[in-house]
Each structure stands twice: as structure tokens, then as C-alpha cells.
Amino acid sequence: MKVAEAVGRALCAAGVSHVFGVVGSGNFHATNAMVAAGARFVAARHEGGAATMADAYARTSGTVAVLSVHQGPGLTNAVTGIAEAAKSRTPLVVLAAEVTEPRSNFYVDQEALARAVGAVTARVTSGEDAVEQVCGAVRRAVHERRTVLLNLPLPVQESEVPDGALAHAAPAPPRVPVAPADADVAELARLLGQARRPVFVAGRGSRGPGCRDALATLAERHGALLATSAVARGLFHGDPWALDVSGGFASPLTTELIQGADLIVGWGCALNMWTMRHGSLIGADTTVVQVDDEASALGAHRRVHLGVVGDVRLTARRALDAGGERRRGYRTPEVAAALAARVRWRDVPYEDTSTRERIDPRTLSIALDDLLPAERVIGVDSGNFMGHPSMYLSVPDHHGFCFTQAFQSIGLGLATTIGAALAQPDRLPVAALGDGGAMMSAVELDTVRRLGLPMVVVVYDDEAYGAEVHHFGPHGHPLDTVRFPSTDIAAVGRGYGFEAVTVRTTADLKAVEDWVSGPRSAPLLIDAKVVDDRGSWWLQEAFRGH
View (cartoon, rainbow, N blue to C red):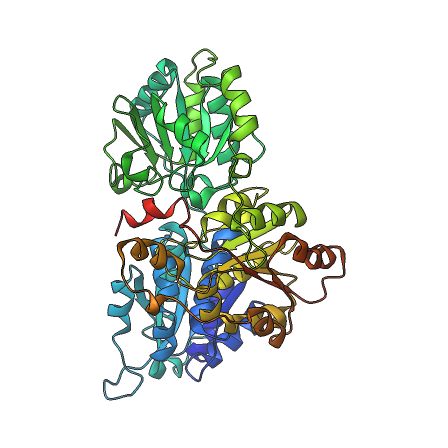
């Protein structure tokens, strides 16, 4: 057996079930070997889309995925998606063919390219070591939660693998949870025991099995309110003491309650400028605790009074075992009434600025939330519009929201939703895009149709890069470079085989209602012509980081 085939088969033996990519001559044999070994190959129309699909699939499924690309331009086309995955610590293996001759047109320093965007690298160097090197790359992706570029040089692909080498390929063992120090647990329990208004903020590190129940039980003991970062949205869905998302997306009530906390505990959460609104959500006398299984994360963005190195679920369970009497804390009747009435953005009164030609994005989002089935998985692109689908469309749990925003690139939302949809096939996939991101990624509409996904693609179409319009416009800068002529995006969708509707008023949403109640034999694209009279509420906070 040649190395190219052995690499593909070893990846499957190591636990990979889904591979995304665009096939060229350099990754042809390895990709076919994965398919022959039982993996599902998802062909994207562009490597950038394939990278984000793989990223979203890994996040939503909780398993490692593979991105397979051609040497040189195949990898460079995928770099933005790889950067997003690397910054998000997604367990992903990027299998890239590699030329070793600098005079080749395909030559680039692929290792340097990967390191530049935060990925780590490995290389298959010989037939004798190929299987172990592949399994090592998968282990590193899983155990270190890293995006690993596995280079597969063309000359090595033709080498022979020793007989029986694949017998040593096996799935990576589960990551061993980091146990917190007893002294840290005792101090955490003490701080919880004396807090009068505690708030838990759960992040990416709280999405693992058992974390929700452990945190909810501990919060109930100490009377804590429950919030999440954006990437963990939905974790506490249905809990009457949940605040939804902390940070720039937070509703006025959520902001008020977090600012009133005397203790904030970040669980697997970076407590960065987005989640803490540049620190403005932390009161002057608030005690801040951060729990993370990597010591380097503690205090990286925010000064903390106590940093606990430990697995979220394990630390919460041990803090619960440490005892302490049950306390009311922040869970007063007044807070309960306020949460029931106005914690959701859709319950906050607003002036509807819809016209006969354009619909208010808040009105659109509330109507879609009512029309679309509750069992959904939502992917959101970046842009001025993004707060509306992120906060007005509810999700059933943390597997229902995939937020690829660590790199803040537009154009990732459609591929995000494809990857998440494949990981949650029993849910309605909803892609929320701006017109800029939609047109940038339109080629993957073909992938949606080809895969037969019953997806709803909602385009918040203000005919501009709205974030730049609202950031620079008030200062009198010319905006011709960020505005675009009207485009019939619905017609673009029909060209790819979608059912499509242009929405200017709520009456136009009857077509969406009909699609939901129908066979859904083709995906649906909604070209929503939204008002552009103001920037999204979160925009001012967002640009403070620029």
C-alpha cells in the first residue's frame, strides 16, 4: 500500500468520519482512500468554504474533522477558514498535499503559512512512519484542541507502507479532564458562599458533556444567574434564571444584572473585550473568578481575583461537593419577574422603522423566530446585521448556534451553517447572512442544493457593507466604496436551485410560512430588503476594539 492510501485509511481508523474539501491531483488518492474507508466526503465549491464547513462540523458534533486540500493554492484558498478554526481552538486536521521543490509553481512555505494563522504543523516523512504520524496529528488535534496542518509531500505519497502498519492505527483516547487543586476549589466555594449577587458566565469550555447540568446545579445552590459568551449561546436555554449572552449582544436587562453582580465566575470563558464589553460589565467592587483547564488562559484578558486551573464540569462538581448552605443570592422574586418580562431582545420595546420598501431587521427577525421550527441550528455571518439573528432567533441548546467569529471575517456564515447542519441533521438549518457575505460566499449555495439540505438562507440586504457605513458615515466620509447597487439576490438563489422570495414587508413572509408547511424539497432563500437607518446596537462596542 502506498502512503497516500495509508494516510487516508489511517485518518478514518483514528476516528475521522467526515472530510471536507476540494480535490486536486495532490490530495486525490488520500481523499479517495478516506471515502473507501467509510468517511463521508463533502465536496465544497471553494476551499475557503470547505475549511469553514469542517470547522463548524467539528464544533457542533464535538468530534475531530478533516479538511483535504491540494498543494499550494488549495491551501492558500483555505487560509481564512483555517485561521478562524485555529483561533477558536477547533480540533481539526488539515490534510494538505505539499511540493518540496522551490522551483515548482505550487511551492509555498506551508508550515510558515499555518503558523502565521495560529495552526500547528506536522508532516508525513516516510512510509515507515506515516501511520503513526497521522495518528499523532489526530491525537494532538483532540488532546490540545488545535488545528493541525498535516503536510503530505508528493514524493512521499508514492512510498510503500510496511505490511500491517494500519493495524496500529486507533482513535485518540479521550482528553483527560484537568482536576482543580483542592485549595482553589475551597476558595471558590468560599467566594460563592459569601456572594449576594453571583453571576456565572459560561464560554466555549462549558460546551462539553455534563457541563450544563453541573453549572446549573451549582448556580442553584448559590443563587447565581446564568449567562454565556456568544459561542456558548443556548447552553442554559429554558432555565428561568438564564440571562442569555453576556457582552455586546446583551439586552439592557442582562447588562444591568451583570453590572450589579458582586461575583462573576467565568467558566471556560476568556472574559475578553466582547464578553465583558471592554470591562464595563464588571463593577468596581466585583470579585472575578476564572476557571479554565489551561493556565495560560487565566487573566489573559482581565485581571482576576482567583484563577482556577481545572475542567469546568469537574471543578463545578467539586465546588458543589465542598458544601455550603442553599442561598437565594441573585434569585429574588423581583429579578425573576424582570427576566420573564424583558431579558429577551424581542421583548424590549422599539420603534419599528419599516417602510413599504424595506423591513426593520428587528421586525423581520421576530417574525422569522415565530415562523421557523424551534428545533433549528443557526449559523451567522459577520456584519452590521449580525446582532439581530444572533439574539432575536432563539436556539434550543448550545448545539443550535454556531458562531464562527473569532477572526471576524465576513463570508463564513453560509459554510458555517452547512457544516453545522451536517452535524445536526434532524434540525432545520438557518443561515443568517448580510448581502456582502452572501455574495462573497454565493458559490456554496450550490453545495447546499447538491447536499439536499432543507436550509433557510436569510439575507439581511442593506446593499452595503453596513458596519463601515455606520462607522464612517457619521464623520462625513465618502461611502461609495462600501455601497452597492441593488442586486436581485433572490434570483441568484433561484439560479442555484433554491426557492426564493424577496421580503420588503411582513406580508411577504407568507411565502416563508408556505415553505415551512410544505415538503421543503428545495432550500429557501429570503432576500430581505432591510432598512439601513442606523447601526446595530452592538456596533459601537465592536468598533471600540479597532
